[in-house]
Each structure stands twice: as structure tokens, then as C-alpha cells.
Image (cartoon, rainbow, N blue to C red; front, side, top):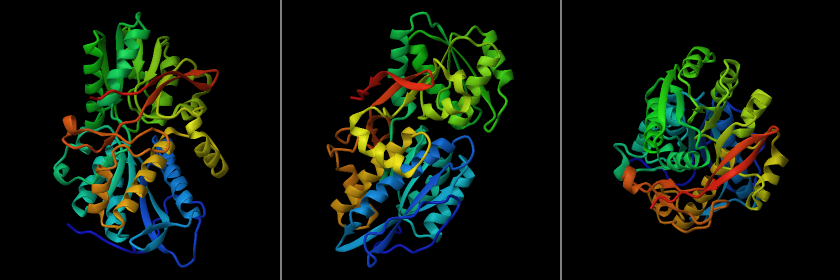
Length: 394
């Protein structure tokens, strides 16, 4: 396995503009981090959240003088790449970041297509990678006996059960669920997990698919309406597609409850479709009124405009975990840092309490962080917490 220690080669892949990086001392070495994220297309809100979360964590380290490892102090820089929420682009990005830029620490992609596209490039090279995507093969794959991938949040396999249990308890009149997803392996897996959860609680489920990248969903939505669906679950569709699905569902006359049991981004959907989002229920990983996030929110608002996507806090936390593991390992050797990550159970994360890894029983490796999540309801254009759920995965 090829591993790189010490200074990483300089260079820039500029598909997204980064703000000025803070430098703590001119004589510090440079340590480059890679980011693969959807910075255009339907997953832009997620990709932007990922990039901004990592940027804020980097700003914090550089502002404090840099990261000292093995007696050398490093200023951190970010090399980003837009994968357009696309597996082929993510693979290309990974190849350039790993083989041309020599990057050994990588954040992203968001979403299963990009994650699955990049892993065959990163894992044989021992690159530590934090991803957010729900596909089982992100963790349960041919590399899992020597895996360097960590998932920054729960997948639908973990959070769908408490969400469905909550619907069963709170909505006794809901009997039939409609689920629509992209017509690819990722969408089919997402629907399969949701159907299993809903049916286990006695719900009847109708499902259908669309071609990824579609903008017109009227035909499939009309089919859903004729089925007499009570609740439409958008599952893990990217914010761009989710907003269009909600808007067009209302336009074809669907008057039932709409819920998205996966994928952060309440504010982006509200901004995209306005009052059509009223009453919409949404899984999310951030409550901006939580006092634990106050410093993070201030830093975010001082640097950026627009809504704070939940993945920003998720990836800020992931970056903070990585930097702590690097300090503990006191080396840039990714095997040593990976081992420290695995042994950091109980370390106090920035927002989510003590670090808790899970996944051994389901994936064969404890590389998935356990974090609380929220069910938000859109009321007068704002996301209001309906429930906070702390998963019990024991």
C-alpha cells in the first residue's frame, strides 16, 4: 500500500472558488486536504455545505497557528473538485486529487453515486476519506478488512426505522405510503430499505422511479395520486430534485403529507419553492437554535451568506475529529491516523456529544458515526423542530 508522509505537493484544481485561507506563520509547511463535492446540479446545497464545513474547521486550525504533527507545524489548505453529483466525475476527481496532487486526506463526496465512484481510487492508496452516502457498499466492500473510509452520519438503514416509528405513532390516519427515487442502483437500494421499514409497521407502500437528472416528474406523480397515497416520502433525493417533486406534487393535486426521510436541506427547499413547502416534514441533522452550535453559526454567518445546510455542521465535526486523530497519531501516516480514529470512542465532538462509532454488526466495520437527528416541519417558511431523535443502535 502506498502511503505519503510529510509535506504534500502543492497545486490547485479550481472548479470552485475558495475564500482566502488564513495563514498562521509564513514558515509553516502546507498540508493539503481534498474535497469532492457537488458544487453544481441537484446536489449543490449538500456539496456547498460539505465544503463550507471543512473550510470553517480549517480556518479555526490555521487561526490558532496551524496543526503541529511530528514536530512540524502545517497550515491547512483545501483543494476542491466539483463532481456534479455524478459517479464518473467523482472518480475523475479522486484520481486527480490522489495521483496528481498527492492528497492523503479527503472529504466527500456527498451522496452514494460519488462515494461509490471514488472509493476504488482512494482505498487501494490508503487515503482517509469521510463521505456521506447511504449505500451499503460504502462500508461493506472489498476493502473493509483494511478500510480508510468513514461515514459522517447515519444511513437510511439506521434512521429510517425511528422515522417510520414516529410516523406510525404521530399519524394514525396514514395507511398508504408513496416513495419515488432515481432509477439506478442507489435509488433502488434506498427505496428497498424504506419499503422494508414501512411494511414492518403495517403500512402499504407504492413505489416508482425516475431517471436521475430529470426535471419533469408530472407523469410519475400522477400515477402516485391515482394510487390513493396518504403520505409521499421523498427519501434521500437531493435538494434540487426534492424541491421540484414537492412543487409538482402539489400542482397535480396531491394534498396529503409530504415527508423526506433523509438528506439535510430544509432551508434550500423553502427558498426554491416558497409557500409550496408549507407543512413539509424533513429529516435534518441541524437545529440552529441549539446553543451548542452558536459559535459555529456565528463563524458561518461571518464568512458566508445564505442558509446553513446541515452538512456544514456534519463536515465541520468530521474535520475536527480528523485533526484530533492526526494530533494523537503525531504522524501523517494514514494507517496510524486511521487507527487513532477507530480508537477515539468517547471524544467530545463539537456538536454531537461523545464520539460513537457503529456499523460492525451491519457492515462489518465500525466506521459510521452515530449522531442525533431531527424531524423538522416547515411553518411560515421556517423549519420548526417536531422531534429530536437519538438513535439507539445497540
